[in-house]
Every structure is written in C-alpha cells, then in structure tokens.
Length: 315
Image (tube, rainbow, N blue to C red; front, side, top):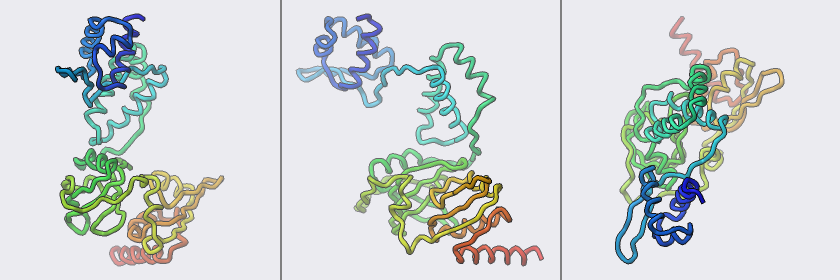
C-alpha cells in the first residue's frame, strides 16, 4: 500500500475508532509501530486533532472537533456546493457563521485553478437572493441546540405588547425573506408560538425545575398538525389571480396550502391559527383585487374594519 493511500485510510480509521493504540494501528495496517508514529505525526500536521494519553491504559484519542476524511466531488458537484454555501452570505447571522465561512474558504482554496476560474466567472451571474436584514440575531446556535437536545430556554422577548420573559422549548429555526424564526412551545401561553429571533433580547438554558415536553417527533414540517386543535385553528379559503399567486409564492407558509391551476390562477386553503388572522387580513388587503377572501367570515370582517379606518383616515 502506498503511503498516500495509507494516510487516507488511516485518517478514516482514527475518525471511526476515536480511541486507539499505536500497536492496534500497526497490526491493522501491517506496518511497524515506528511507521505508524510517523503517519500519526503527519495527520496531526494536516489538522487531525489527536492527543496522546500515557500510562497502562493510554493511547491516542481524537478530539471532539474531528476532521472528516477526504470526499471526492465531481467538478459540477463542487461548483453546486460552493454556490449553495455562497448564497448564505446574504445572511448577516447564521447558527454556524464562523464555520460556514471557514469551510467555504477551504473549499475554494483547494479547488483546481481552472475550477476556481470558472467559479469566479459565475459569481456575478448566478445568485440565490435573500433580502439583507440589519436586525441583530445573537441566539441562533443555542436555539438550534435546544431544539435538538429537548431543552427549555428562558428568553427575554420584545413583541408589540412589550417585553416579557418566556420559557420556551424550541422545535427548530428557519429563515424566510432574510429573517430568522423559531417555532417553539411557549410554557407561558401553553401553546405553540412562532418567535422572531431578532426580537429575542436574551436566551439561556432554563435552570428551574420545569420539565421539558417530549417533542422528539415534532419538527418544522409537522409542527402545526401536531399542535392543532379545533379551538385554535380556523379554515381559510382565498381565490387568487395570476399575480396574486406570484405574490403568495414568495411567502413561506406551512399552511394554508397554495394550489395553482393550469391558467396560473390559484387557491389558498387550509387551517390557520386564529391568532394569525390580523396578519392575514393585512396581507390580503395588500393584494387588493388580486385576492378574493371567501372565508372565514371573521377574516372578511377584519378586512372591512381596516378599510373603514383607511376611509376615515383619508376622507
């Protein structure tokens, strides 16, 4: 086995084993312990985070921040991955901001020169545009970790009603139109709520004796169905023109669902939260003649109230 091939296989082996001795590796690769020691030194210089432990039960161990083994990409795959990551530059805040920037730099640096030239030529000709927001978002990482490990957070939240302290259990985070959102179970309201991450003024792990809910099977795609109750949700039905369909396609809603007909017109229907009716009233008012709300009556009445206030304001 050539040295280069042995180093690659050795990197994959130590990442898999995490803890090992020099003798174990020497036996597995059929080389001397001196050769393995030299190879481990080279891996360490390449960035594999190894440390040694002395004593009868000692050996080598890979730190938590382990280096993944090499992966071969085709040129088209490499370009696609680069631009998928490159598009994240529009977000000033990411849950893995530093790591994403470092990974993209490494990815670009180690590409062949002709592939880098191709990417440079494409940078100003392809993009996945996202509006840049200036609002500070400081707690994406802890929100994501809490959603994965089923932890309760204590947050300070600023809404239209003012500031309040909340104990929440995040389900995940997602970005839409440049803004970050966190659907979470709110223990204060005893229901699922959607929080704007830039409105969180602080977030830390809750140290009270409040027991987390078992939300292991709840995620971003099924959260509404999991928490839905007849008292909290109401049916909505809206006819849309072709322009209305295009406007609604730019919105990221799990519900209601957008159905598009062959002529380009469409229909919005499904269950929405009653507490979100003020938002939908303003949204459909903004669409003007491009949307016709058929139900619920409560939504239509809210839109009429907005119209009356506008008439009084501009009469």
